[in-house]
Length: 571
Image (cartoon, rainbow, N blue to C red; front, top):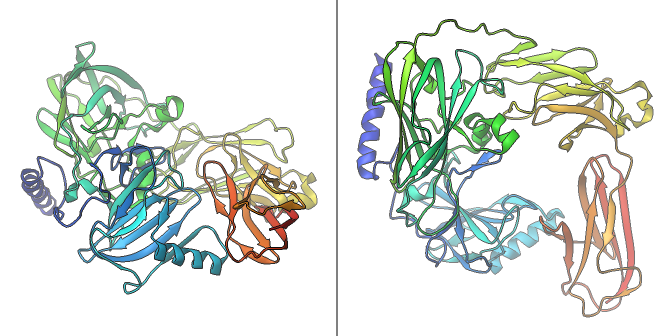
């Protein structure tokens, strides 16, 4: 009775909101007049909220800045600066503003901050002797008014080109929310585009790369789509559907993500997906939402319209039987996809399905070790131990293991830990026993993923232990080689009068760089770091007086191998 009442209530909420929000699927209403656009430019986007990205859903809007940096960035509402952050990758330079209406706005990839904020960041970097910083501020320190310039747009961090990444978050839960639900609309009269569908024969089996699937091309335009080869589909048993779809708006040629999906059978909605809001610790579950094996093998984005039992994202407002449809009655059924963008533009695809009664249900045989998605799972065979905490699998798993030939220079055999085509939400624990001849080198040992490089490692109780974030082929190597330092515009005895900066590059061959430290005359100096070029740069300031000076640059890798570069220079 309670469950039924809840379903009725959800239907009422969606009905009310759809009337108010151009038939959008959303769970609640948001203030639509509080916020202004963060740029004084006609709103145009290169990336949409919830857009599919490798390993995550896109968490904001990417506002275009005419392919250049330096546009003033304005506070979207009055409030205060609550957080400042500098990352080598990620957001680069970022400012967080907290507002009295319960929301926080985020401005990322900034070129530079306002002078008072830049001075605060610089002092924190100096006090903590670190380029990368992330710290919070008190409400009274930097109050801002609506429209106040807080920074200038840029291309810092892991940015693919000049733009402003903008987010609106719930200040309490820190969930990120679609900014276009707050009235920050983008001109859009273009309905989503559908290019194909995929049919999955599930029949009670866990989803994997071995799930039988059929891909069908789709044709059409202007919101009306059909199968390229029109036909009545003959299906039986438990079926999952998937779709390949993108969206564009009226301001840009960029291929963006859709806002919502509905799957209907005989006019009854059995599955709903909408990119309204999500928590950052659940964003990796994009790999449960997409057909992950197909993405790994072909980079094809297929959005599954059924929910894996271990997926925890909050982007599924409604479903029946997790979106899995049972065709078992010998009747003709209609199946409809309804795909929308946040502006309400709609595309539909209608299918005819002739159902049939399944003759036999295939037996779900386990060839390896059965791992359950909702419990702690362990595997051990002597040379290898694997532990997967609960909540890290999206579905039950027929876990497999194999030993492969030893790689040159390795201190163990290569261990195939299941399949790289199976996603995992977070890290798992992996122990590998090294060869007996590792001896005193054990503390320099790391575990290597054959495709992705070092995943770290510590030597403990006769094993090298690491926390990989993906399955694959793993083996042990040792790192005794220090990083390589390449000075770009300095050598011992250089005359740097009139030179504005000193630049270096540094790289490590295996375990990765843990830290940089540079000093002039024994005093720590700030090295600016560029994510794309990997150049480290010290920009001279007035603390370096004319005369002779000594520069020392120290780079340490994850296994504490150290390189030093020292040079005398005149200034």
